[in-house]
Image (cartoon, rainbow, N blue to C red; front, side):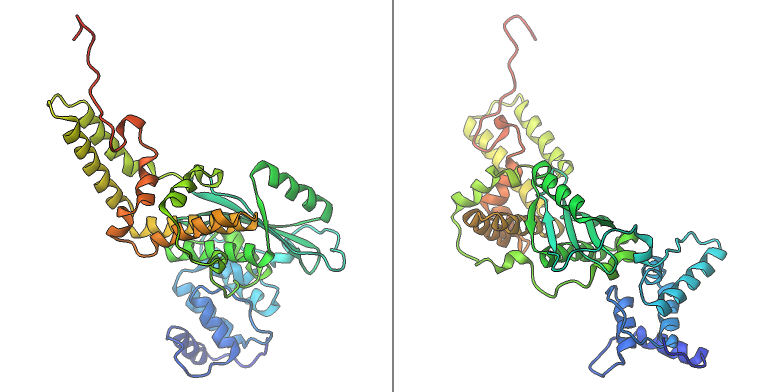
Amino acid sequence: MPKRGKSSSNVQRLQERLQQPRGESAWPADLAWAHEVTRGELAAPPTEVDEEVVQALLAELLVRERTEHLAWLAGLPHRGVAKAARTALHRLRSQKVAVEVPVPAEAALPSAPAPSEGEALAGMVSMYDGHGQRLVWLAEPGRKGLLLHWARASARTGLLEFTTGRVNRRTLRQDLQALQKQVSAVPVTADEARWFIHDAARRCEALGRGLPSTFLRASSLLGPAPRTPHPALTLPATQVSEEKLLALFELRELRAWVPESEPLRRLMLKLQELATSRLVISDEVRAEQVRALVDQAVADYFTVERCAAARTVLLDTAHLLAAQGRSEEALAARGAAELFVHPGPEVGASAFARKHVERVLPPDLHVGSSPRAEQPAAGEG
């Protein structure tokens, strides 16, 4: 890192530039990198970074209370940047601020045999569980051995957990084989696995949630996010029949994908009240009342956030199905994802969205059934 006589006025001027939009003017590489970091882009720094730029970046991160970004900088292989960030963290600790001061990310990992020449990169993804979460693995050669990244991601809230460690080739091979059997994980390309990890981090930041500190420290090893759209969007967006869309709910990969329970609990209470009502009404009127309640519940359920989560689940599942060679089912899942691009009344009106909500209701409360209060036996009541 080039050194020169530090000037507080220069650092302050650079910090003010970091607070401004980039615009179209050309910026030095190190200042442009610092600007990206303040915006949440955890990219590797250029080889040459001016010391005053680093000081301005650290000052701006402190103003924004981004201690997790300081921890990430402190774990970078770039010695000058990492040293300055660790100094800033130590200063915070002396002020009784609870922060972790990491060592550089590679040094914090146990050693392992170096990969053989031409070591193939490996990625794996699991299907979503009943909590809307899934796992992503990425194995690739590092500077001093084979690295394994592991992430747990939520379709709605993004990255929940992240770890990076060293493994040898034999252990990795055994672990990946076991994962395919235990959690139905599917092999994918390394770039695809890296895309899914970064996408989970992006969703996390978009909601204002802090990223796991382990992700920030290891992000220089993980590498930048591929600048490509969702891998499933390479599938053609074809017209899919309603029958094929509804058949998706029978797939093992989507069987655990169910609506959140709390919003539906209110619907269940209303349906139970209707079922136990003593009012004498015809089956047709009762069925119409059930239909109206479910219509309103479906319309209320699919908010902007839930539509985004549904689209994530369906696109991720489409990609997973395509990776298994199940092209027809993958195209159906890709088509279902398009239903949730534009949240609004059209979503709730679709048979697919309605089925997603309706399938968790008791059979006697489905639309078209005739729920009745259970009548007491003769001589009772």
